[in-house]
Image 1: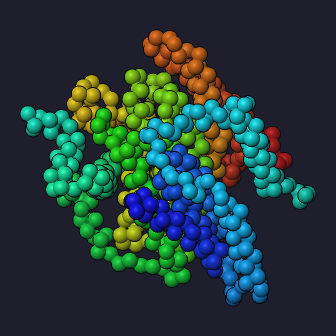
Image 2: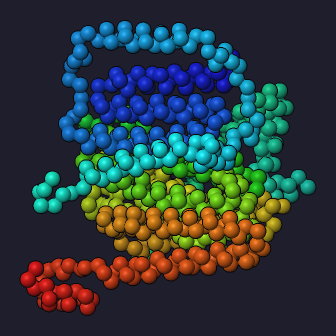
Image 3: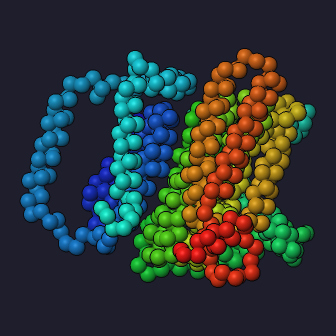
Length: 173
Length: 412
């Protein structure tokens, strides 16, 4: 076992454990914090795969923006946001069974996928072409339309947020 | 001969000596490299934190002089050792955890606050041969790591179980996220001109310092990085007259010390970044042949930027929160967008011209932007309605606008 494999196992373990804690934690705030750790684990996986650009973007977008927004939203929500007792749902084992079956089905369907058995090759140092990636995002033949569509979606979200939060004068709604 | 080599480039000399020593003990090359990386990062981080001792003294001394005091002057020559007894005192203080505090976030936050700043030092090139790592996404890494600092403040504010701390954290994160926008936009300008996001490359491309090519972007970066650190005039984060001390109100002893160290280190780190991005980093006469000269140049440049930020800290009053947001969203963000667009277009159009002409054209464009912004501000200021506050006959200086308004607007 190489050092990289040990690092991957550690990171994967931490990521999975914190992902479970996201749904398992009693306080909503703690869930949000575990989510941050899980997202950081994903960034670390990217880093071990020599994809430093994606690692950094993962950190920037998911932790710098989204996780902080989630933390804010949780903090601004009224009430203590704590689970008082056990699960509200009595038949939780049925849900667990369904989840396990679904996951098992996915694994079974993908069992012949070549990605499972592929051997990772170490990339050369300059294998990451950020410039080409950037050009592909604005190339009509590549990803221009998805890219623009995503920005229109974000714009729509922003307009909606402003509409919801704007103070209406004179009590009119 | 070897002594001269050592003087020319102590870092590389010591690294080679250390690696040779380890290899002589019969360690595998991989192990030697791993030990080297761990030792290097340990030394860099410790050096940075010890450097803060000096920074605190310098800052107290300058602020003291601004306020017509002597500043620290008892321990050591010129009081230079003052921070060391302060440090020992803070080590011996009790760690108080407030009741109802969320223990893990409460204790993780101070570590994260310092760690997030120290991580930036990993990608800064201190001289031609001395840098932690040459990441091809260096600048993006700096920004991403900055978001960990925001996370530290959120955790501190939440974990303390204190309303003032939470309010301080809200303010801090609102301010930091807002000011990231013009800061990142201003950082893109050097990236455009250097054609790379790696800080090593950006410094190497600066045959002409980028502050000469884009002074407006440099100014925006300077202002927004002061706001990012949260120092005066942007110190709403820990406005002691409003919030007691902001997000760190519940911290004591070493944990408070960590936030304190983090703040000073952050202030110096943004000065380092500014010097690397706009003032040519380690570049200067003879810096390529004798790397230690580059190190000295870099710290002189950084020192000038840091001194300017300390002067501003000592002399300006605090903004109100709406003024702070206005400055960011109504002025800095649009201007930085404008600068970015103008630079991107102009740079492509005039890329083939000789350096002098090219720099002059860019300077002229920046002057036009500066003038336009000044005109816009004049217009904005003249159209703003100033409400009169207090008694009509209050003996204060009034602008003509206000007088006219108070005469005609008696029915308000």
